[in-house]
Amino acid sequence: MNPLNHVAIIMDGNGRWGLKKYNSRNKGHRAGLDTVEKVIRISIKHKIKYLTLYAFSTENWRRPKTEINYLFSLLENFLKVKSKQFQKNNIKLKILGEKKFSKKLNNLLIKSEKITKNNDKLQINLALNYGSKKEIVNAVSKIKNKKLKITEKCIANYLYTKNIPDPDMLIRTGNTTRLSNFLLWQISYTEIFFSKKLWPDFNEADFIKLINKFKKIKRNYGEV
Ligand code: IPE
Ligand code: IPE
Ligand code: MG
Image (cartoon, rainbow, N blue to C red; front, top):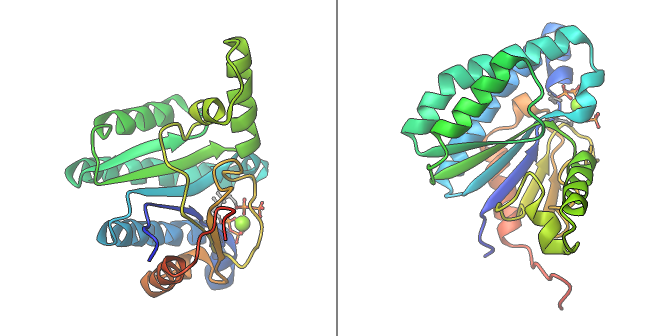
């Protein structure tokens, strides 16, 4: 049985779910938050140490302003309520991506990271304004400026995911089989699962089924 330390999730399908059910993409984003809470709970139960959630990509700025504003207001409320609970439950929050939001949200993110930084039960990495190509370019240019030798280890040390082990599993919901600029460096040996379910419909049984499937896979890493 493979140990499961780090699960990364591309939480896709909110908009379609909301449109289908309530004729509103935003209602789908709201419902998606309940699934976020569910996967956090299950991750703790299964002693997963890192949960990385793709919440907003560098490309998502192309969406209508009203949707973007709604997403960030949801996030703001979520953090206001949750960062105290994270602290109480020994959960560490880390943001992956460039914190280039409103001053208020930037400060809230920084504060949530700061108050939870010594927690060690579960680390939630929230990928926000995250783009994998941008992450790699940033890393390489910092290395170049410092005139360091470019090695795999050095690049890994300049990514947002510094000191975070690579994901064991990547799950993408939403019936779409692409990576959408997520963790391209970090998932070179990750087991990838695509779920047809839209994110708000993804439930405990779905998650556990995938975890069990993952546990039985023979991970070769190039060996036989
Ligand atoms: C993913 O759901 C959540 C974010 C990108 C914020 P989508 O909003 O992409 O949902 P679909 O893919 O349009 O259904
Ligand atoms: C990926 O979903 C980003 C997040 C889940 C935050 P998208 O819905 O933005 O991906 P594309 O644009 O369909 O590839
Ligand atoms: Mg989508």
